[in-house]
Image (cartoon, rainbow, N blue to C red):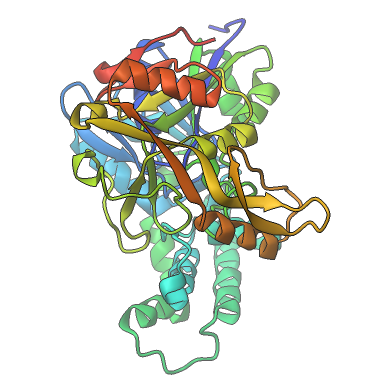
Length: 458
């Protein structure tokens, strides 16, 4: 049945990721009767944890976080970077969790970028060579695939290419040769470090291409790749759709803190573009999500970082080989204001991990920095300010060198901390006051039943 209008919920993480997008997607699917989840940015590096009402847990990477709900479909839009091998593994895991129809409920835009083994190996090699100066990559190869689509658009692999075997092989050979020539180990025949050697051998081994094509052939056999017209058809027949974002605004390709950024647009722009193109009469609700404390997985600035609450935070995400440890800090209103400035005004705010307050005597928050980044209007140079800064911005026209300077200054900023009794109502009021808009939803646990709407969404 064609519907006259659609209600679209666009979930935007206002932090460095890990704020609870999966939980909110699952909650909105269940409570707003959404039948479709659209992934609108990022890629296979997502780790959206959902615990369903029966206690089943899954970390959703490429399947939408509403998949536990029977019949809910996922569309990976043209803005998503797909890791086909990992997608098949994830689907198999979900089948083993009791969801036999998951592959039939997921479709991939034929325009979506595809991560190849050569992208992932190149990603690993670059991070290994950086040593202690790693960027904090997830190690999946998303950035390599994005960069190729910009610098070498004619031979980047898109989902629609997976059914054209001769053309696919030509593109894979081109990518392999390019990575071999451009990587820092090019021309080096004495690679002794075992991990580096293993990754480099992927670029040297001619058999990788045929083995990889064979390993992902189910994608084509299952008829998972579709033109964008299918998504338009789904939207026209849906009353409610959830657009599930990935990563966080503070990791954004343009507004994030170089070099600790992603290649993706982490605002809601891609979702808004899809909606305005395919379902222009829709009612749009942008929902910004934050934790009640700061969190960051991997390297990069975290001005309020502290070990104080580490032992009391319940966390699914753990240390991994590429990102390193999960780091925590006190609530950072300066960063949150910056994220809101970048992402634009949200129609609602959600604050997760409020159950942490029950294990605290006092809740700390940062309302200003000393030594934060400020641009001299006369010289255009970025320098630390010894004034209390409650707001900062990063002009879009900065060079990468200037952006890195901005990051260095921010990394040395000293947070001005205040305290509040760890009472939920007091904390909610304080966050609303700090950010200039009310909190609409809170979560006090890991399941949809732990989420409460405090104020109706617009």
